[in-house]
Length: 104
Image: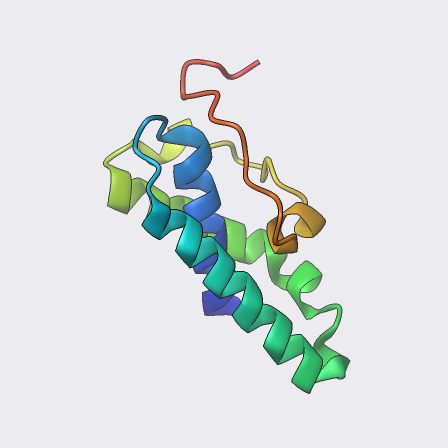
């Protein structure tokens, strides 16, 4: 579960903060990770609240992974997630691309 959330958040960060580089593969990865998390939660209902419990830790891992994969300095990604847990898990949510210079 945590690894899937790490990957999902890293791809959301790359989508939002690496403008002009988004690919259909990124969109496919977002959908795949969301489906897999949904399956885990469906098969183990007791884990319903687990994604929210580990969200902050997974976001930190996602920042590190997004920085490594994009070459963007780690510190340029927000310390707090710009996505809610609901947005993160929502199959229809894809962030806008404000770019790194638009931090307002």
